[in-house]
Amino acid sequence: MVCMRQRRIGTVAAVLAVAFMAQMASAQSTAPAQKPATPAPNTTQAAPPAVQQPQQPEDIPGPGVTTLRVNVNEVDLVFTVIDRKGHFVTGLQQQSFGLLDDGRPPIKVRQFAQQTNLPLRVGIMLDTSSSIRQRFQFEQEAATDFLLQVMHPADRAFVEGFDVQTDVSQDFTNRVDLLDTGIRRLRPGGGTALFDSMYKTCRDEMLTLKQDFAVRKAIVLVSDGDDDYSRSLESDAIKMCQRAETIVYTISTNVGPSRDKGDDVLQQIADATGGQAFYPVKIEDVAQGFHNIEEELRSQYLLVYTPADFKRDGSFRTIYLQSLDPRYSVRTKKGYFAPKDEQ
Image 1 (cartoon, rainbow, N blue to C red):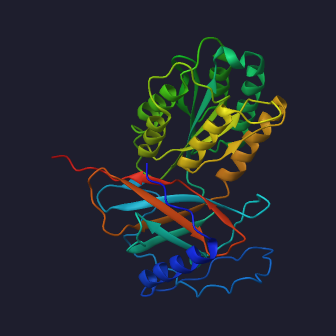
Image 2 (image 1 turned 180 degrees about the vertical axis):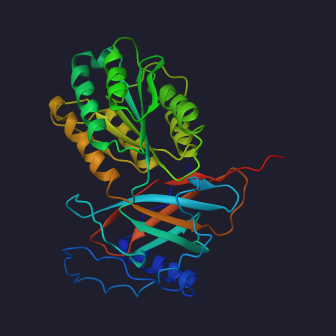
């Protein structure tokens, strides 16, 4: 997996603003989006020149398209913006961001939407290994509460437990009662094959998911991050999640005074896929992690664009999305795998 070197915000913002605006200068404008309710004055950097919002012609993707369109080489990028206090920032406009796909600005931005309400396809992965036996009841209760809050009629979710093997106790459904039954059916015990389980879940449940409309795919992983049984590497599991276009949110069940290597694993998985890692202070706070994920899933942006120099060769393409306002940071996936044409 290729990671872009971090640079100082001021320099990156300037470079991205110039490159992004050069590609968008010819786009026609539409009504401006709503501005943030309480923006703080920026005393360190002048506001970047406005990038005009592209008009949406008839071929702009709508509810009847898939997440990554193979035929027209468009990318749907879902992302979250937070301020320095970790609060979600909504109401920003397209010109507030700069984007590089594989080191180059996109040819065209086709759609920009705020607070997207795309249907969710969510997987709940609960660690059922022996190491979390005493914490398992809290995981179950918090997972059910999360589903009660997050599920809308168009959403679907599945429930899975994992130790040395995976156990999908309830496949995709929008019925919370069935999902709750699946959660209650899980029992802890055994070793931990975290990476194998993530790899298999993204391959079998997410990569093969066929939809006739755009959806957001996410996994909520509740675990201590330890792995003592997998044949797959952490990098293998992450790559499969990226191929499946799936965001992974992780909730640690470690409640010690300091983070251990398992927590670092959970952080790396979340960062690589555009999710977030949560570290409850006590096990009863696991529910707060679920609540934060629910809030984030309803406070996101959608950017649809055509990448430059796109090759259908199966290669990994890096994504670098930057807020041009240094007060805000963007959380999204590190990249994606281009589709590969069959020979």
